[in-house]
Image 1 (tube, rainbow, N blue to C red):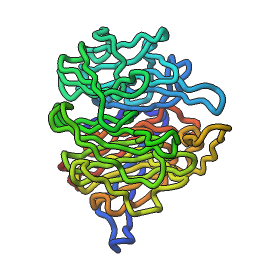
Image 2 (cartoon, helix red, strand yellow):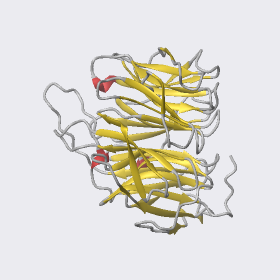
Image 3 (cartoon, rainbow, N blue to C red):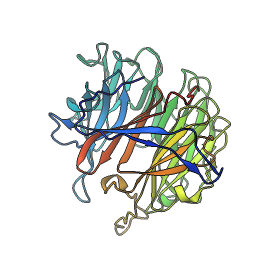
Image 4 (cartoon, rainbow, N blue to C red):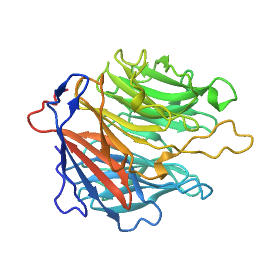
Length: 391
């Protein structure tokens, strides 16, 4: 289990116990929440922590980001690193990018990869074998959503100027092959649980109207040679797949983001992604409700994170729809959603922050988050020893 250090700039510990109105009894699974508010020594632009990976007792790698307000640009990103549980961060200067995000994947505390694109648009994949002390360029590719499942096998996607292609390496990242995917134009998430079994979630256009964009999930059981496709049922155009998470080969969860102020929706599959069902609870999704992350520790215990915020986007002439961006607003309306029955019922509690990404760590979660006036925040959730977390 990843242990967080004691010298945080800010640390708040809370223990929640839930009363389930549905079951008429108190939940037996309280959990502890703690915050670590950090700072970055040499980050000139980025102000928040995005995609995050915990690789040791105190070591965290992440994508740092800054998304400006309307009319001030398309945002900046870079790889950032902390060796003291998120109290202090440093920026990998060579990874700084504008408008697009670099990608990272670590197998353990020593071996990892990052991929991005230089200011001259030259793509690269770098690898480290010594926990980031040295990085070696091994490929001229820009692999997004990059994920290595072992020392040799990595997956992700690449953009060819028109659509996203599925990308795969079998030699540790030196050479990558790409292939088109049936019925998908934009790949948003890539999730593999073994070299053979994985999923890709993306969107496709069925007309020129953005509101006609549909969400699609593809599943492979032979490492990407063949794919089975499933369209996610939605009555609204899907702007983005915000999150995709599989606990095992059967149970998975999906969050879709929609245009204008139509919010987000939570879906579940129990057949490996062959079919998807929207969760029936309208109080946790829909207009003005922005789900960001869903993670399960076992088939029963899971967490999701959201924020309730009416985001009024500006519609420009000639634009059919726009994507609301709640990540840049205030965070007082954040919520933790907790389930101990496999996601049938979600029990909410307030959270003074906006959670961006989470990783299952030991008996709980480690998450990147934003809080008002406390950038570079790390949220930690831990279940007590009395609660089993066996997958």
